[in-house]
Image 1 (tube, helix red, strand yellow):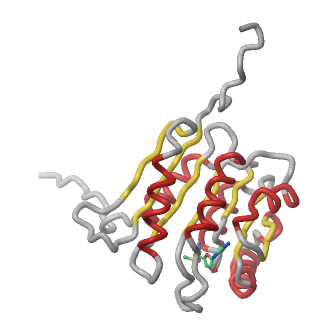
Image 2 (image 1 turned 45 degrees about the horizontal axis):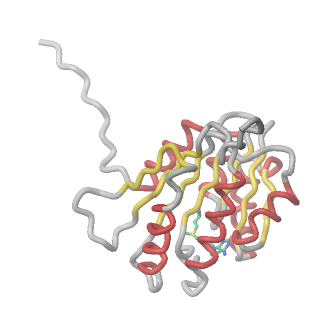
Length: 212
Ligand SMILES: C[S@@+](CC[C@H](N)C(=O)[O-])C[C@H]1O[C@@H](n2cnc3c(N)ncnc32)[C@H](O)[C@@H]1O
């Protein structure tokens, strides 16, 4: 009797894996994409691969060392030329994008909150700057564009940030077509989770009808 080949099972998906799959299904060659928390550049590398040589990525981090590390990773992959590396706060996203890539609306903006593993844990994303950056993201994204946020409630200040992000997500119903929160079934409240938001494809807010 022939035995059907078994499906490959890699273990349970983490929220970040789900985000990466979602990003990979939306970002296309030639797009503009933004990594708002570049860290060591893992997400930047994914975005650079997806946009290809005609596309652009803006990678932002407050830590100069993080941006150095991200730039080295991209250089090693031969993709640094398609990335603008920015040492700065993502709360200034509008200005940063206007300065670096003014010709195109981003197809995707990624946030991976918290601190950079292996570095100073006091340098961490914070509720007020995160919300400023998320709000800027929604107005920057092109129609159908994707906003992803991986949230880590476990570290000091993380729970407050996660509650602030969840509250903010409650309010984006009109501008988003999809707004999904991914967390593991029976995961403890301290476990990482992800938000994936797809911006409406049509103009929003709608232009008022001049004849009425
Ligand atoms: C979880 S790490 C990101 C990991 C990264 N995506 C990677 O692939 O390695 C979070 C990053 O956010 C950065 N960060 C903290 N506050 C920030 C801010 N206001 N603007 C931009 N980056 C910030 C930290 O320096 C840290 O590198």
